View 1 (tube, one colour):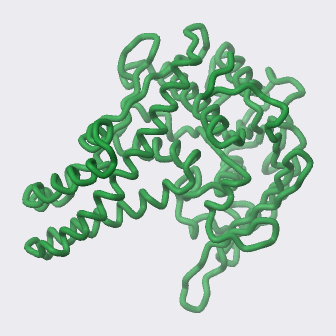
View 2 (cartoon, one colour; view 1 turned 180 degrees about the vertical axis):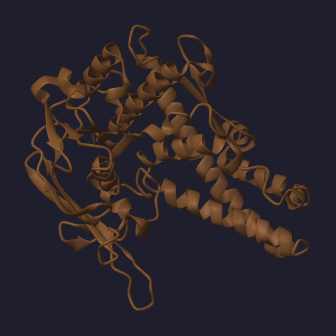
View 3 (tube, rainbow, N blue to C red; view 1 turned 45 degrees about the vertical axis):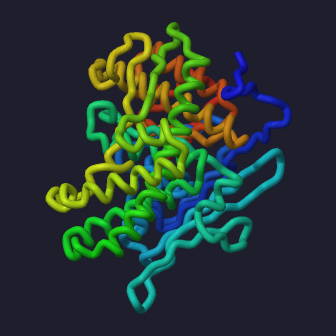
Length: 384
């Protein structure tokens, strides 16, 4: 059933595929080139062959540090010159676009700079790629998300926001810098009200902007899930909401009023925060609260298998949201996901992916994990 947030595939929606992936001096790949033709691409090989590295290469075409959140310098091949290059060719309804990114080898000063190019022309930042491409992913390191620290869930939520709002990452980074500045001032110059007022004004503006962006994405995703949920599906539906002092403020007050109230709370909390050595209120303390919908229990109390299924359902719903909000069906990256599902859920996963028009890149050690997709999947041997 089509809903405002879950549109049917229409004739006007651009169909796009990554038709070429080139990785040079990236991770363990000295010079690799793939030219897949299918919508489902399965990267198969032994552990250590570099399958996940290729998913990571694709994930660099969105703002941020990719699916491993690694420093760019660490991505350069150990035996290489110190830099790397990754490029993809996108076929969008027959029109080709070439996107490239990488790291220049270190110069005389030891610094290495990131490069971004679109159709041969320099791009100012990875944000420019969002005009052509959106990417979502699921990796094994997310398996403990619901039982882990709140910071892990905030990072997960920020990635969900980033897929629909390419400027969100820059706002989060600026907010974190402002918070560090405030913490240093509280430690070194606690009586400098003028500087503290200025920094807290910046923290309040950025903090409210971050909180509002998170809230909008969480509410849209929760509404999409509610409109399309089906208890008979192999992946249980989730309900999500944000929990935190600032989240409560932006839920009630307009942005300007929320900024004023947050700024006052920061001012009143200076002595407490100095004693703690950190700022105790703000978006850096928020949590993403997820519940197992059919059972109406906290996600973290569900069994390990249920948590994994819940997470898969959440990522699939997010892919639909990205498509609805951006008009671009995202490329979906699934690292070692299919192999760990029972036959029913594996079939359900492939059925759900088939309903999404975006290209899917998957990894696995055993090609049998993708047998249920038949000839829809192109199996690519990595490290052979």
